[in-house]
Length: 120
Image 1 (cartoon, helix red, strand yellow):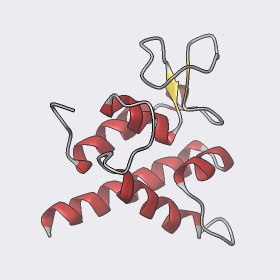
Image 2 (tube, rainbow, N blue to C red; image 1 turned 135 degrees about the vertical axis):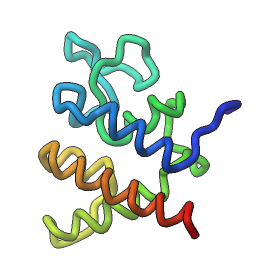
Image 3 (cartoon, helix red, strand yellow; image 1 turned 90 degrees about the vertical axis):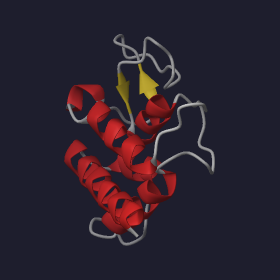
Image 4 (cartoon, rainbow, N blue to C red; image 1 turned 60 degrees about the vertical axis):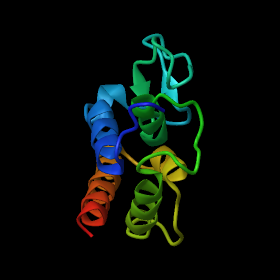
């Protein structure tokens, strides 16, 4: 990726993409306006899950170790999920089990972790 985003930029942009609940979805990375599942990078993608949003802003089609913000999103998902479940959940499972506000809570925590990471 030529213009790779920092983890903080990546997380902030992905959060903004799904901040409006009508642009957020469950059980697939992305959907078009007709509700059909599409790749997150598809130009017709209209709504995204928590990970699909991260794919979209980084223009990638799958989770890879080097994806900016990935580790912070996972850590945040583990932390947030323990408030609502007996076990930890990754961001995909958490996204599919909770309402939009909790996904935003996960992103807010990930952004805090990334901010602290950049300051270190």
